[in-house]
Length: 295
Image (cartoon, rainbow, N blue to C red):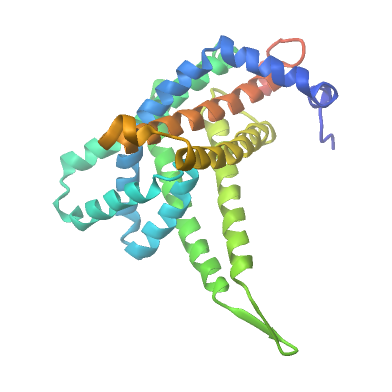
């Protein structure tokens, strides 16, 4: 079985050339402009999406445990602002009985906007795929709601596993008169769970959103690239907003929205750059698109 193909070997021989080519292609595709559009619609979609998901899952999971897990992993997406979002969700859940059908449909519609814009942004980056085949409009219409269902099931699974890992952290091991707490082990496992879930979500985006069939191996290349870049970036953002930023002085009551929008734009930039890495890997060192059989 061949683990690394000819394109992979070419990248390994000249990694910096590949990175530079990916950056030039990302700039040529107006990647920052696309990221801004994705971030804007993500800002519109994130709260309705979380409301719909939390309302559905609160019927099978304890409300406090669900919000605690959601807050922990929202900190990965919008570092420093997760508490404000969770507080709004908690307030909304307290009055969920008044949600009518019209409001529910409205929430579902706004939840899907970010996925629709992300699909269009992916079509710009994977233009060589769109030139060969196009996705049926009904598939594009249903795809966001299927992905919302997938994210809801993922949150359910993560909540159950997180609860088990937190229970492990409360245990101790007694051996030969010595006692060791498992709290550190539990924290490390929770971090690895979050990182693994992040890579899985990003990889699934690269598998589903581009037109045509993308191999899991190539999607994993983009998923790992975007996840590692985001891990570094989110820590930098936390440090910046905690020490240097004067955004609260400039924007006042709009601070939370501005910070969330800026964070989402950075995240969207890395997400689309991961897609650009996959696209350049597909095109190869000669810049030629792959054959249709590979799509």
